[in-house]
Image (cartoon, rainbow, N blue to C red; front, top):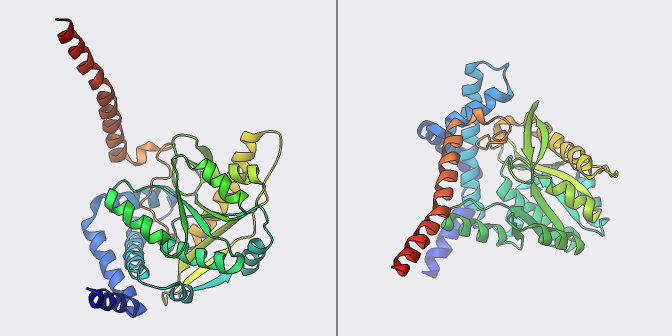
Length: 330
């Protein structure tokens, strides 16, 4: 068994990057052909954000997005067998290295990274964690949301922590986020997912959207810098890290306005990167599901069915209890 695991580890570790790129594109084409719901979702999002594009442009970009997704999947599988040094060797800082180093060395109150699902964000988490520990000696903590499948959530939990990172899940995350920053550690928050509860309204691709105000809120609370950071895949497979200047937080007596303004600044940095590399962002998401639900009729129908089912499940025990009480009385 030991020899089997050693051989499997050697196979994935030594698998050439050009093959990963080629096989990943083939996998992406297969996904594009078979996964009709997500293909439809990607096209709707693209048409919504780029109304000037023709139908042909939308189809070409959709295929490119699926190809990049196929590469991302294979890279994640391979990175599960790589050492920290191997991970670091696959990245280079393309811009803003000074911002990253200075922020890590000169932030006694901790540091907030803001990111989005662009390039290979999962492998990028490993790189950023290794870079953070080697520069500041402190661990990186990522705020994540569970996928909803038990075995897959368990796998990603082990995967994200394997090189020393910590993970906080969004439900009840606030106290842990504050504690992380008060320990002068680094915190990573992704900003490209829509929220219904405790959301802030922003402008994203010229349309109203909702997102979490957590990054702005905790930055104001702990008075720590906010550093937008993104990684994108280059043509040769190397991951290029782009670090934006630290965002200057607005602080006034109006907390709601401060949250909106500061969150919009973070979203602007994110949108700027997505517009430069549109084929590498995860267009499978629904950032406008609250403000423009007409984009996602299938999702809205499922959501209403789930709400109806939850309501029924809440009422069902009551009905059973009443029946039991009546039988007892008899």
